[in-house]
Image 1 (tube, rainbow, N blue to C red):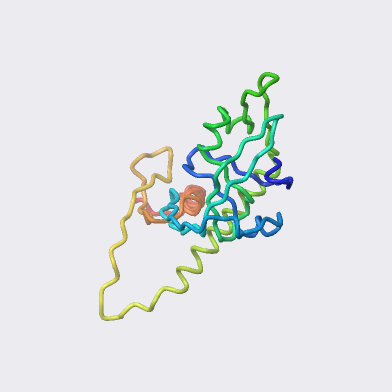
Image 2 (image 1 turned 90 degrees about the vertical axis):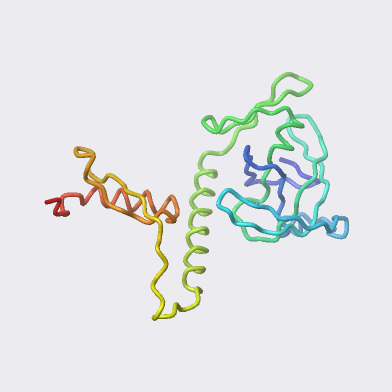
Length: 201
């Protein structure tokens, strides 16, 4: 997309986001004067419960499919694999319909219906990099946790029961409920591959 006067790639269209986001480093690369920003901070909370503070807002034009509209962006100063995240404000104003299965967005323009297609290889690459970044952040947080007093009992972790032998629904093991979804799926797959090593009786 052309945002302002720059051609911008690696744009995530997020149907679950209530704001459009642009990252401070991207604005600097676009050579946009940050003095034009409104310095209003607000918290943004993701589905993972992680909350970050914006550093301001800015209004920028987006040109795509023969149309040009101005949109408000929350400015975020945080490293991320995407350059821009477009949420429901963009989708609604463009009257756009997104298909995650087809990795495309359709919206009306002066000539009919315009189809904006994503790059499947780039989308997969961005997804993998973002997951690795999340796992790295989780590891750093775990490593920097303060040492526990050896005289106090460890906190009780909530546990969920997972079946690891599909031929017998009674063969379940308990795993931590707070594990990240990707790690949980990997652990369950590993346990199912090695289910025969368990002494069930």
